[in-house]
Amino acid sequence: MIEIKNIHKSFGKVEVLKGIDIRMEKGKIYAFLGPNGSGKTTLIKSILGLVQPDKGDILVGGENIRNNWHYKNQIGYMPQIARFPENLTMTELFRMTKDIRKSVSNEEEYIRYFHLEDSRKKALKNLSGGMKQKVNAIQALMFNPDILIFDEPSAGLDPVSHIKLKDLILQEKSRGKTILLTTHILSEVEELADEVIFLLEGKIYFQGSVPELLYSQDETRLDRAIARITQKKTLTKYKNAGM
Image 1: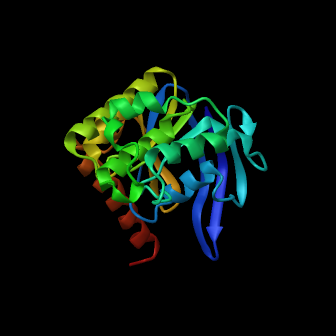
Image 2: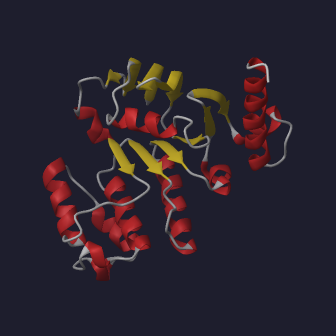
């Protein structure tokens, strides 16, 4: 479980997060949506400990993560772009990761699942973008973490691999994992997310299920509902500015 309590974060004079409060339960998938600059990336980096909030607390499993690095062992993270030491082979990468984590892993299960058996000894620099993304997914999953964070996970994947990854995400949900997802593919949100968290200008403007979001905006399509939220905010901003 993840609890985010009154998180604020500024970079210089720009306030990126403005009092974020979220409680994320086990066995649920949360989709973070919002335009560029809405605060999604900063919020995810705050949970990962890569950004230190100016104010507020983040609790993972009931423990505050501030000055506590052990909680990271509970998280598997799949970034949007895979960046590996490209001189290494896939086997060497996984061995290095296991040496660092000093934890039991099950990468073999996922290597077979993604049909990467014949690529074990290939240098990572020689793998296609889609294959690197599969390696990226395995890195996130191989230690069986309680929390999974997927940042645009389908980027570069072919349709079959995309389906296989979605099936894996649903499988991890059924095992009671807390899953965070950022994506621009709205069909992915409709298929996977239990709750949508829509951020705009550093604030949460909606949190609830896809049907609740559609109902709240009187729309039948998710893209139109999201557009309506954004338009309402823009109109309010202009009115407040006297324009």
